Amino acid sequence: MPAPRPFPRPASRHRRLLALALLLFAFAAPALAQALPSDAKMIKGFDAVVFSAEITGAFSDSSYLKKFPGPVRVRVENDSEIDREPAVASFVREINRQVDGLDITMAKRGEAANFVVHVVDRDDYQRVGREVYHRPFGTTPGNCIARASYGRSGITRADAIIVSDEGDLLFRRCLIEEVLQGLGPLNDNSDAPQSVFNDTSKLTRFTPYDRVLMNMLYDERLTPGMSRSDAAPLLPTILKEVKRRLRL
Image (cartoon, rainbow, N blue to C red):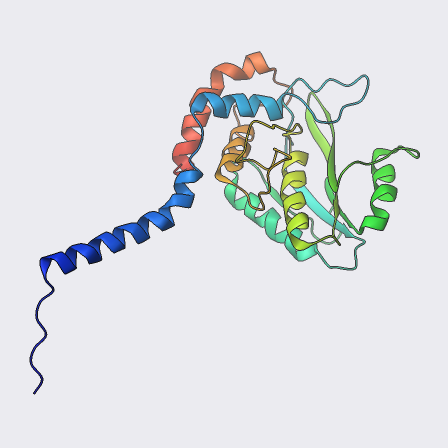
């Protein structure tokens, strides 16, 4: 019979515990790096993307709160060689799960859609952009773009145009940014590194930062057409409640 193994020495046990602690820290580091900014910075970021718009008409006013006042029904027009409809549908389901106060689903057969996602190959990007913007001689910038038709009663229709044939990462990045922007946060914010609304970021997921912003926007206390000054007193309380609900 082999001799019984001795109990680990205290020093050996200490080294094992230290190694385990280092391993746990390594897994926790990405989460720590994604900690949300201060409440003041979160509210400033909300103001930046909600009470303005990246692209506006010569006589349009984008200085008030914009969001869909009712259910959002999404349809995909896939003109690309790659079928991206499953990816769009998956992200729509994710938004519906993650954002309280927003009813967003894919349109059923025969059901009218008020948000159309145009998936195109690069060769068709300009043509579809001209059709969506009703500008026969216009130029559509970038790899993707969102357009929303809105007034003080809310957004009535949104379109997102996304290039599909230049890689999965680019498509995913564009899908998240443009669908979220079409739901109301129509401006970019270069001061938010944790957000897809920052055009310099390489994010390809629905980040905690953006989940907070979208939940704030679709809180029932914030209504379409509301001014920045009317919304401001409500934002600290809404932000705290959203963070608590999302456990952030």
